[in-house]
Image (cartoon, rainbow, N blue to C red; front, side):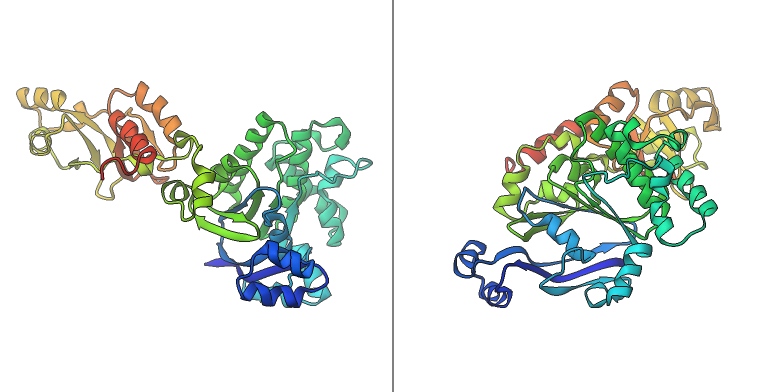
Length: 399
């Protein structure tokens, strides 16, 4: 279900927006519109939906229109045309009071600059949005401490912002948004001012928080690696136009325009491609009812030297090697529990190839890919990692 629906949002800066819109309808270029009308096209008919609980990243270089677009979504900038819907409410048609309530209760925004009050404590800064909502002092301080705890700063509640590092100050800014418990988080270049190491920490922190909060997040960045790491889907913008919207892996596999292809050509695929993309389907699986002879038979028919055992609901139980199965048959054993290896390496479908190389290097048997409920999805073998990289780097070599 879509939380946000953006329909043909266009923003023209200048004194002749109507004329510029007419020229856009005639597919006249941004540069020609500027030359003939003096108007600048900030966003050109952007349309997309953001699902509930999704991190939707809008990325592009400076001047691409990404920050203008996010500000049109909460009307910090008034769109020239188009509509923004949030939970079936048209934000672009809201009056001043409705818009004020939308900003206070439904959404929150994290900016590149922390915008903290230097004379207030960390807790008082975090509680500011609640103060605007006329929440009592006791309740807002309780909620501020909860939000600080979420971002790992509860012990700093009584410090002043000037006593914190840049990364810690940005955590305070994030906590201030979380304290009001918004449905939607708008994050405009939120980590761009941070040092690279702190920036990576904040990216990890955001993903960790999202696994607990499940907020709908629209995140703006000019950094492709950041977009690919954070986004459930990524929209790439150029000259006010959305060039492509896709999952990170699909953008790398199938760039739809020459601009996107050039943009992603230098990406380290091992940082982005995932276990789900390179795992192979098991040729055979064992079940708890199977004895050693049945297990060995399944392995022989599939031509494999080991087999994963799963429950009736496909939950991973363990692994059995052909040597152990053969030995059990020779000893006339009927129970596979004695030969079942339960201490095996597993990974989630979204684990990147970089991390998989380390996992497979330390694993004595294939790595099992399981979902968050431990259900078996596939397996990773060392050869599939390398072939996956080669296939993505040279996708047409086999044609």
